[in-house]
Length: 245
Length: 241
Image 1 (spheres, rainbow over the protein chains, first blue to last red):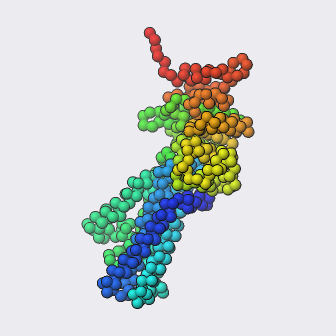
Image 2 (image 1 turned 45 degrees about the horizontal axis):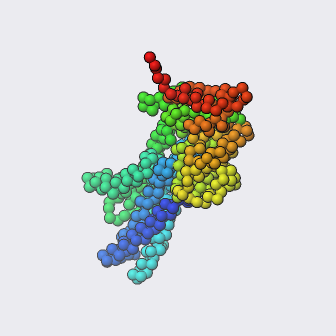
Image 3 (image 1 turned 90 degrees about the vertical axis):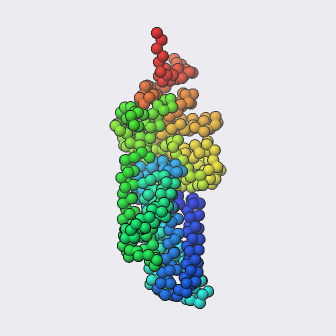
């Protein structure tokens, strides 16, 4: 398994897509923080208050969508580029491949999330001081939001890799996720805010303690996202054991 | 040694492979012949664990592919369904396979030398010709220095010089004692390199024979004899009344 995981990291490092998605994550996070600070200060919000910190930092997870896309590419990309055959020739036990990809995608999500958090801190510190505030680096609230953003990226990476293994078709998996996150989930939320809280996009917002909605507690949100990832992964493993490569 | 034992695979109601049995012995080149759609690739995919037979089993030195301890050290395979990430270099592709299989990194350089691809190794596969891709596929198959080689139409995309080079390579492997099973529909090529012959048509083995059976009294293969036999076995009989 260790060799397999190392090989999956090597696959990631040797494609430009990974670096492009990382750049997109950093740019999105940076711009989102700038936007959040401008909106907050225009509405005369105290940026150092609890509400101010949540309003500014919850957008750190906005690049998480790119990690979801990368997760899908890590798994389903093998079918798109027809590299799956070589992968299964090396590792005929396909569950090992699925789990390695899940591990690699999740840990890559941690890295993406940590870089997003770093970007958010850098941009926010700079703008806070420009506006005469001090960025509260010692605030446990700030760190719990940033930690939530790292977790959101990791779990989105896991969800992406698991669905990519299940669906196999990269475009369908990505389009399906976008439709789910941006359309279907909003429709569900419209019908029932209580039910909507249990869905992936709302869960990721709960992880970063988005102040604009009534969401689940951080820990519950993390557990539910993990359960989604495990269920999709197990379905992928079971399905894969019955189908031809 | 490769043993295919009564392997059957159906897609829907069509039996692509119907109780196929044959053996590819060690130290010999076994040519696997048949018209397009005869079931060659399906048989090889089942042998390599990429698809599972409905019945029967395919063994490599007595073991199913999925049960091999280290598949890359046991079998090298070239298949038409193998693709490459266009934005990745040939050498990185080999490094990834070597890493996943736990093979020594220096082996990458060695196989690149064998297939004469060293000078293009750093280039992205997207810019490779069909022949270069085929050489990369062969290099990948050779990474684990396997005693068994399974090649599905390995000369696809090679120019005449490349085909001659591949023939020498295949013959050399058999001389080293390896088991080589290769499918082809280029009869001329099979005639020049195979020791053993399996002909398949409509999913069934219609002839398993030694190439010596096609030789004349002087021990040389009689030119055209293989083609004659192939058409006799695979062309539908027209009944004349």
